Length: 305
Image 1: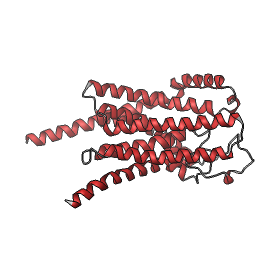
Image 2: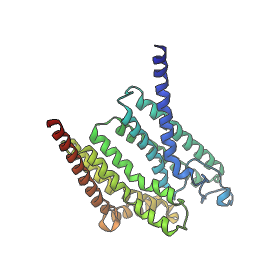
Image 3: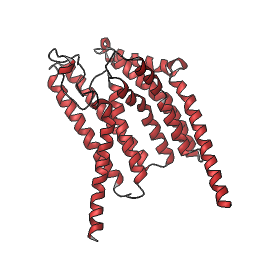
Image 4: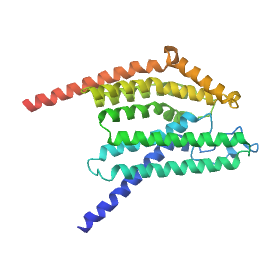
């Protein structure tokens, strides 16, 4: 009886650690770079890249997609762990993992924001810059928690959509391992790998839809939303990166927003590239559904034999 009580007390702690580890894995593409804060346009003193302070997140207008990717990926991994193990410990899984993820992400955001604030100039522009980056990162964390909850506890259709949303960030997450986010010197091998990772979201979305299937109206709707996310998500990343990374527009928010909207509309088309991701996603989905059908038929035949 005592052993059973102790086991019940340990279970939440295990899931807490699982959540923390998932969030840390999400941060890995940045952690392996050495974690030096990217050079800042509004830094108070001239500093070499290797002398910039160490931070847990790459705060910069040029690394917005990487910030979102490391946050969302960690949350999605935690959601997957929660879903896989919820049958064993349904009462503790989600809450403990959420606390674990939040602990790591909040510490990372606060440490990075405080460290960046210390080095920036005292100008209003610097304060706005820091506020926007911090608020945006917090928003990414909240979106990540929503994805975590959907993957962990939502019906199949909802989990399918959540996985697809997280898949959009997978390319940027993998790219962080292949090349430094602010490096202009990329080897041919790295360039080839970067081109290959572009298709990873399509594969993940196709597998997610194949896993969920199309047996109900809800799952069909989930598949449609998943493909829309695959089409629109990378386009949104492209637009935000293009607008935020255009330094000459930093003092003109309206023009920056207009430029981002133009890039977004342009990237939605065939020439933009994101529409081409739908083709391999559909192929993977069809192959996955075919495998599911074959396995189900084999099990049925075995049961009737």
